[in-house]
Length: 323
Image (cartoon, rainbow, N blue to C red):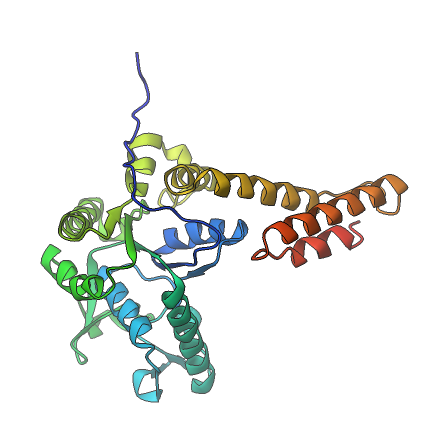
């Protein structure tokens, strides 16, 4: 008897490696995968606008990156002693508008440069429920705790999502668009409403994948919801996946997109990082000093072999006196 439902992961026509920069935009699940990429020394820019859940705002953010848009004071508003943007997460808010604009424009400029080098962009859709600002008549990425009366809440359609992305995809035929749906459940909307939302997201991605040869779907949602299928893989809020679940998805992601050489390099990186985190009983002992020198030599060997890698943080961890 089989007590395990295995999710079928398709064979993709492209791979991801350390030499290929990646751009990621989307929900907090994007942050999780992006963290794993950073940890394993991939060149990745993650959420240059902060966490964004709805596809319409994600398409708008990507368009700003493509155009290398420069935000001005006219794009901001002042609320609760902070300058904010309706297109950005609250992490992009400061008491001085110059600081807000500086962070916004630097992140867009960095992402624009990354876009010129990347072959893969990963979008994670979180929710099809959106908030439209009544006065501005536009969908916002973040309400920033303004009164609910300022917004209309509605469920966007499959066609709205497709329309928002189609022209952007057509203009970037040389880039692989990898879509995922976040397994994070938006239960504040209601369980039924959350299921409606996820269905819209899945249908829209299905249509984009069918219409464009450079669009693909990775089943992160199904891996967590159907393959793991247990509340022990969710945090206490019963909404966000646990680190164990995230690592499980990460391993599936790696098996789908990393070739043999990339996997071997990841193992070497993990070996160095594990050594750097080692806490000795006696830092000054001859045995530990020999261990440090051995690891430093190994780091130098890896950096000579892979010139795009840098282990300066690991060097500092190894050589500082850990007590």
